Length: 91
Image 1 (cartoon, rainbow, N blue to C red):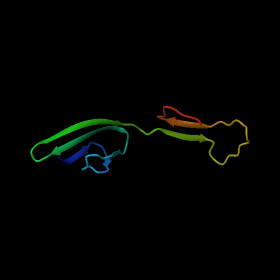
Image 2 (cartoon, helix red, strand yellow):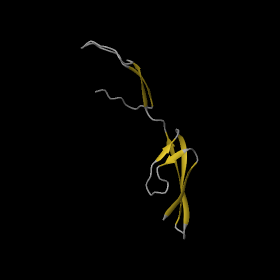
Image 3 (cartoon, one colour):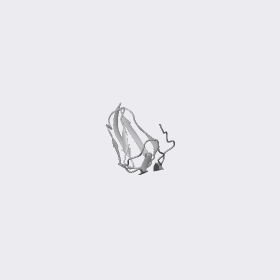
Image 4 (cartoon, one colour):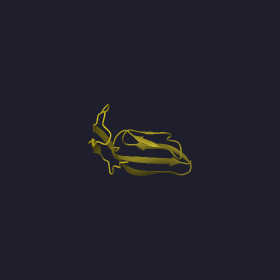
């Protein structure tokens, strides 16, 4: 079977839209509908799937900002803003 088209309603990029296996890259978070269309010269068909793409988790360091010199065995405060982060692991 040969894949003829794979259409997306919003902007996205496929590594190889004619391969059985490929990666899709989306330009922004949102809801996307992917349509796979196939044709083997005797039968034709298509199938749709809707997926939701979310923003990537982000941590923005507020302090320290770099270049600080701390004395050994002192307590320092580290501040950050997190977006869509579930867990933070300190080690």
